[in-house]
Amino acid sequence: MNLILTVLEIVAPVFLLAGLGFIWVRLGYEYPIQFVTRLAMTLAVPCLVFSSLMQAETDLRKLVTLSLASLTGYAAISLAAWLLLKISNLDLRTYLAPLVFGNTGNLGLPLAFFAFGQVGLEYAVVVFAIMSVPAFTFGVWLVAGGGPSGRIIREPMVWAAVFGALFLWQGWQTPQFITNTIDLVGQTGIPLMLVTLGVAVARLAPEKVFTAAWLSLAKTLLCTLIAWGIGFAYGLTGIEFSVLVLQLATPVAVTSYLLAEKYEADSEAVAGFVVVSTLTSVFSLPILLAVLL
Image 1 (cartoon, one colour):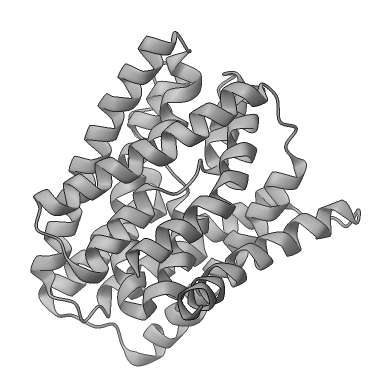
Image 2 (cartoon, helix red, strand yellow; image 1 turned 30 degrees about the horizontal axis):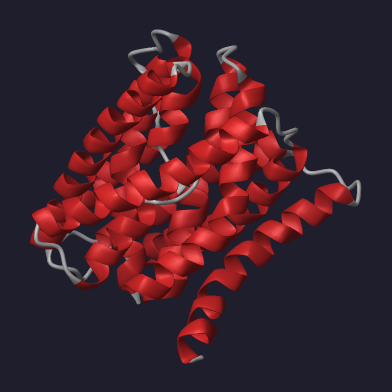
C-alpha cells in the first residue's frame, strides 16, 4: 500500500498538470502553444539544464558514465527500432524517430524530480541533454530526408548542456544574483512543459490507432529492456540506473508530431502515435516506477 501511495504521489502531479492543459483547451480557452513552446525550449529549459549541471553535487565520473550509457542506449534503440520497422514494412521516415526519441523533457524531467529529488533531476537533465543532440540532428534528418546540418549550432539546449558541463568540470559558479535569476527562470520549465503537453495532446486528432497501439507497446518494452541491459553493462546502480531506464522508456514526444508536420511526413500517423503512447504511459510508467523504487 505504501508503494502504491508513493508512486501516486510521484505520478499524479505530472498527469494533473498535463490534465490542466488538456481541460483548458477543451473549455475553449486560448493557449499560444507555439509561443509557450518556444519560451520553454529556448529559455526556461536551457536555464534548468545549465543550472542543474552547474550546481550538481554528483560525482562527475558518474555523470560521464551516464552520458556514455545514454548514447549507447539510443544507438541500440535506433538499431532495434530500424529492424522492427523493416520487418513490419512500416515507413522509416514516419515512425523511426518517434520510436527512438521519447518525451524526456516534458515527462521525464518532472518524473525524475518527483521520484528521486534534485539528484534525480540532475541525472535526468544529463540524459535529456544527450538525447537533444541526436534528436535535433539525426532525428530531423530522418523526418526531413536530409535535415539542416547547422541546426545543432542554433539549439540553446545544446549550448546549455555544453556550458553546464564545462562549469561543472571546472567547478565554476556564476555570481549569486545571476544564479538566482537562472534558477527562477528554470523553475518555470517543468510546469510549462507539462501544461503544454496536455494542450498539445488535446489538439491532436489520432489516426491509425491500431498501428499506434502495438507500436506504443513495442516502444515501451523495447526501450525498457535495452535501457535495463545498458544500465547493467555500464555498472550503473541506484538513482542513476533508475533515471536511465525511466528516461529511455518515456512515450513519444509531441515534438515528433511538430517535426512531421513541418517536414510534410505522415503527421496524422505520428499524431496517433503520440496520443496512444502518452495514454499508454499513464499505466506503464507507474508500473515501471514501482519496480525501480
